[in-house]
Image (cartoon, rainbow, N blue to C red; front, side):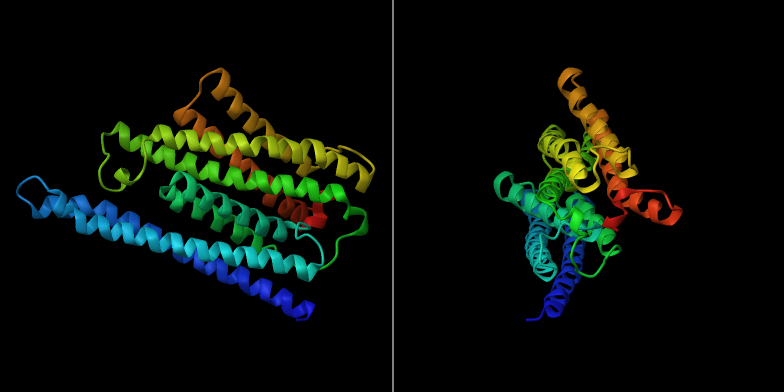
Length: 312
């Protein structure tokens, strides 16, 4: 295959992954819909208390949909891996050179982390928010597509790959943490209202969801620290002759670090858990998205001077 054909294969795999992952998202939404309707249908059709046999058909349907959704997610993840690997082959380098490649790789990592957690911790109940976040980041990435090509020589150093790899791994865990935080808020609200049937019965107690959000963030934070505050400045020194210049991208990476540091500090020292911690975790992820995507767009649209405009 020629380089052009490999590049086209990567583009096709990325587009196919978007479609398959969206289908997985729709199937899991259907699973939720069936789970929500099941107890209502039983209540309307029964004059006595519903029995296990009355509930079984509806919940079996939900379980079947969950299985289809997971299968589609696995297929979508395989396509993402293919898209990422073939992009690297076409570019003749590690595919971490611009916003498109960063988002492609970050989404792949997040999906692999999610599926690994499904296998080890049975967190398939996290499917809808996890896929929603993955589709958001992948969609943003596709909107910044640029043809495969070489990096600027001054940027193509060993430290660049250490820096970006660390940040991508952190992004994957932050995506899972944000998805868990969002789901926690929904589950916690239903528990407060005493509504734990139907869809809510498919989720674990809110405390477990909170623990998963914390664990994912706790893993992502040191990776983000290593990538943005240690290897990032070292790479900048080799590429541009300075460690830190208060570039917009650097500033928002630091803001993201501060928010997540506050999240972990509040949990460990002040005992902040539950809603307050979940909201901080979500804000942290929003600052990450701003750093990843919006900063580059604003820099381009308004002519803001940024050393990171090469990554458009």
